[in-house]
Amino acid sequence: MPKKLLLSLLCILSAPALAQNNPQPNQAPNQAPQQQLPSIKLSFPAQCQLGQTCYIAPNGDGALNIALPTQAEMQQGVPVVAALAGQVMQSRDGMADNKDTQYTIQKGQECGNGILLRDPSGWQAQYCHLKNGSITVKPGDMVKAGQVIGQVGASGKADFPQLYFAVGFNGKAVNPFTPDIWAQPFKAPAIGLIASGLSTAPVNIQQLQQQTTSKNQFSFDDESVVAWVRVYGLQTGYKQRFEFYQPNGQLYGQAQESDIKQPLRDWLAYGGYPIKGHMNGVQKGQWKVLYQLLPPGQTEWKTLAQMSFTLQ
Image (cartoon, rainbow, N blue to C red; front, side, top):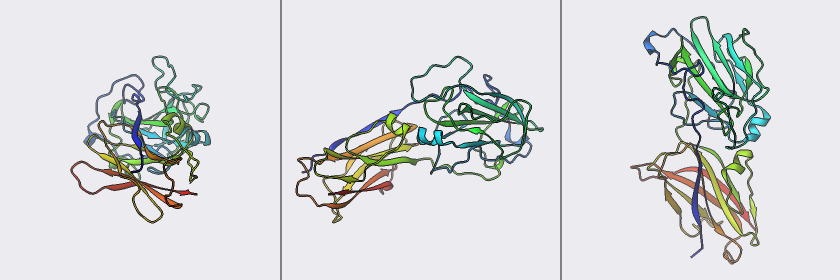
């Protein structure tokens, strides 16, 4: 029986970007009655593709947290645009971007580098955690919907690259997931893949947040083959498993299965097998690895990630 590496789960936990979801910093708003709101058609605030180059990280505070997979994308620059046409009411720049969870901020600066916009009818849009030095507007400026006003960053109370985007009307919060307020309503997958790859040893979330790397060729001198995935939105009750298939299509060993016991924003899982001294005699060639999820109450496993590597 092949010897397997124990399936391990790591997570990073992050507090909400702000303690409140009001477009006016440091004020707790009431919810604006939807039926009383004037019509608005917002532009999506970041120039990225949901589920591909960015994802909405669950935060539970009534705003959108549009997250980037790694620091590398942030350094390359992901534009942030004005969601509405109006005036810049407030802005702040000059706060450094955080590279990990080891940072300190002063009270009232949780938003980091930010912008507050307001249109003539009373609609407001707040942006937080923008990249240091990226803001291109100042208070009093008039902006057009879709105009680039900054870049996604990690300033303020943020331990990963993200854009915190809150919507309000006359100081009262509006649910940003309301379809009618968007020019092009978006659909954010509840669960999705951030990244996946292969390595010779387990990786950690800090490494993967800096830059995603993967190995696709292994030899019998390598210590192990480890498949890893980063997933967002996993909920309690799901099951997950890794399966390794040999070049002839036969499953190697057994499926490595475990339960999801708590909901997490950013989930890192990995599974694998020792190679050196353990895989002698197995087939060389192209191997396939599947990462699958089983939703609560269902019987059909769903493949979320597929990886391949050459053993030579």
